[in-house]
Each structure stands twice: as structure tokens, then as C-alpha cells.
Image (cartoon, rainbow, N blue to C red; front, side):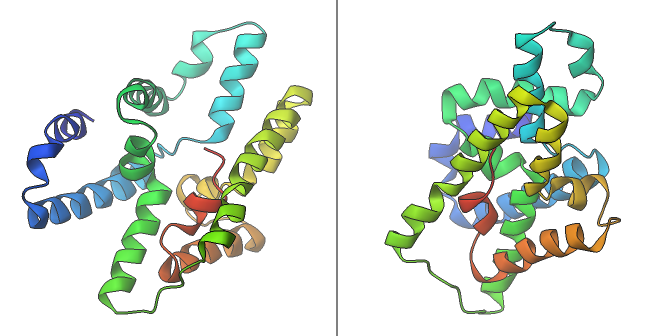
Length: 196
């Protein structure tokens, strides 16, 4: 996170070296997937947000959030950087599932796999889906956080990083389907489904 912060502060200078930036970004995405995602299981989730909101509405307790230090540190970093650089810092650099999709898309481009370009008129309508999912999950969490957690399986993070595809086949099929989709359309899940 310190390296990423430095990169963000000197990004105007670094973009003068596109080849270096490309390889640095690929390396950072590999780090995000391997270390943050699979090793530390540091995938932030909308469930974390819903838990935080519920905690604010009820009895706030720091112990709940300090149970998983990597998630806590990531949230603090995201909260600080979103104010300065927007959500792109997390979505573009620190989200393991987004990084995995981007790496798959990068390989697809190298292999010259034809890309599916969604027309803007359709993109505009699909783009709203993730916000509707977020609103639905938030509404469900007001009734029951446990129910909201069940429906938060729209996020394939648990299957991919926490359980490493060791789940029932519908969850595996869903997560794998999203990753296969990223071969043909860059970060499809992030653009149209992710409630984060």
C-alpha cells in the first residue's frame, strides 16, 4: 500500500514511461491476486460494508472489525484513498477479483482473442445493475444481515479466494463463468455486477 501510494503521488511523472508502467502494473496485479487474494484472503466485500452500517445503527464494537487485520487495513486504506483518488485505487489496483479478471483479459489480448464490445446504449442499461444489487442488499440487511449475506453470493469472492473453488458446483460455475467472460469482455463483472 505504501508503494501504491507513492505511485499515485508521482503518477504524472510515471506515465512518461509507459513500458515500465505496464510491467509494473502487471506485477502489482499478480501481487494483488497472489498475496492479497489467495494468501491473505483480503478480498473486500459488500458484506463488510453492510456489517459496518449495521454496527453503526446498533452497538458499534471495534473488536468486530479487528478480527481480520488485513481486511481492516485494506478498509482504512480504501477509505483514505477514495477521498483523494476515487474508487479506482481499490477497483483498479487492490481488488483481487478485479485484478484476476484484468490479468485474464491481458492474456486474451496477447492471444488476440476477439473482444466483445458492448454498445453504449446497452452498456448504459447494464451499468445500473450493480447499483440495484447494492440497494437490494442494503434493504435486505436492514431486515436481516444473515439474509443479505446469503444474497451477497452475487460476489464470487468467497468462492474464488476464501474457499479457492472448493465449493458446490453452482458457485464454482458462477465464478468460473465470470472469469471466462473476462476473456471476451474486460472486467465484465466489475462494470455490471459488482455492488462494491
